[in-house]
Image (cartoon, rainbow, N blue to C red; front, side, top):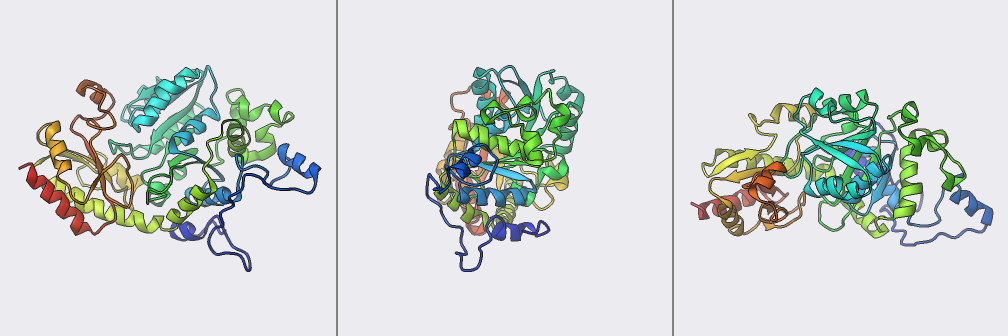
Length: 428
């Protein structure tokens, strides 16, 4: 596939190119196993001396072609699909971290990721330090340690909708000889390609906009191929020293720019699983083919909603980077000139009961845990996903107690606006 093709064409064409007489739609290779006539040939596959398929936990043709499409969209050299976005973020870090290591992360990240980093990975002996992405470079650098292995952030944070200064984070990471890992779920590569701003590894919850229809749970890890692992060989022995489970093979020597991705598949997926089923990958592929069209409509609809809410006296505050005057507006013009996403955060004048009454008055928009879906949906974290936290604890986690997360879908914009207005009228 010509890498010069534009994103909309890559959405439709990248990853799978049928040959003469083959199906135009990606086939579902729903098989765990692949048959060979030659025992030596299968042995070479297990030794990573030959490319091919032998067991779907490691690789599957359907999954690989969808991964290739996502890699092309992000401009990366390789991609691995996972069974969830949570698995993608875990694998992205665990591929270069082990017990005794440390990484630095923005505190403006999804709550599930916050818990993964701060609680679960800590139990594995991998510690993290949370920093404000708005802190100065000197303050963020103060969090680094001799055993720090990575810096992590979200392009657009969930649920706070903060826009990451990717270039700043990349400068900090590279000054300390570590890669920058960016979760690019909300803007998708249609609206932002973090590699172009210095990021080294990108993750996605493909459950969200990439699927778009709430049909499958999945994740993806994309490698730029740009980070010079061998220059920091002592820091990343898993990539730069022999892997005894593959007869002493060294990933950087054997696979060059594909070292990080190959280790993800050959070692982590081999040992831990978390693969998506080929059928789920097929459903993701269907969603990806319209990603460029849907993102444009999500952004157009969200802009109209944000403009309406910003003018309504019953709204206490709103965060949407497409609004002039928003704290992240100028940064979004730099990193997200074509639009950010369909998700916004806002608060209503009143208390928690006010937010709940407004949500319960909605007729079209779904109250749902999901986000970044074709259907508009809404959530009040303080009453739902984070209901176990006090107001003080919510603020410490960067979530205002009155925060409402609204994910604007691709329905007719006038119907969306009408539903929001009539629900606002119910609260006075």
